Image (cartoon, rainbow, N blue to C red; front, side, top):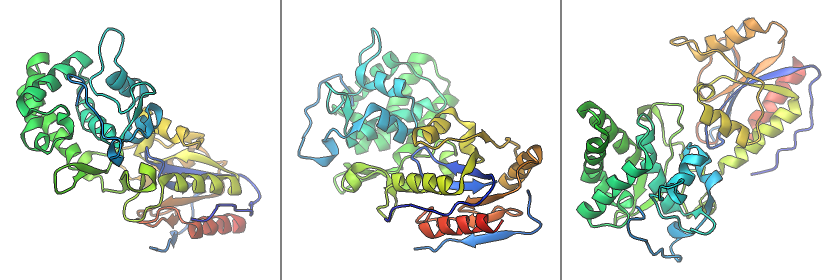
Length: 343
């Protein structure tokens, strides 16, 4: 990937209606309403019930992710992840970190936390309850790290939820819902022939699980285990830097316009990537994103120049369509700059 030094700066103020996921993949919308559709298509180019001994020759067990970084990738609050791995006040940890001294996690730790995070999506279960549920699994499955086991994906999840449900008096409907959600998370963990996790396709938390494609993958064998665009090996951090270079080159003001703007965790993920935004478009379900952008523009009549970056159709706006496989390309960035220079 080349560097992103775009030198051209259009005169006057421009706006970017921007969307991006928690891993830093950028899909942007840049912000008077055009009289016609205008588009440019980019080229398609465990637990600590018993302490675990880690195999440091296995890439999956090498400490590689500080708590803050892992929390960013998983879309979890840092305080929650730290509590799971380091404990909290009088409560002990529920997962053994690869490096307890520095609290740096391994890829396997990432998978364990990812699977456990499923119960937080709608049910905020406390540390003591989680520990008791995992201890129950250790006895039933005979494994020191049940969250990594393939059998957890078959019947372990149901056993865990049943035990947790008994402790917190969770309804039968709630148990079924939690089990289904855990299974949805487990489907994003790819395993080898022995059933050992080798890849993780994290969710973008702003969308329902069933609607999310496998866009980003974390593989300890690729890019030192950092998130990359699935099938390409392109680090998502590269796309974030490219977007920031585009913002600088166009002197644009960023406005969030996707569902990511509705969640504090994903908004924090945008800021953690170094991307500053001025505001967000209104949430107007069931209206489309295009209409929401139009509503924002109508509230800001001073905005005279804008463009739209998205991997899907946004009718009625000047659209620069990103590649579903490669995201924001340099070619597309140059096209945006050219658009603004002619505006």
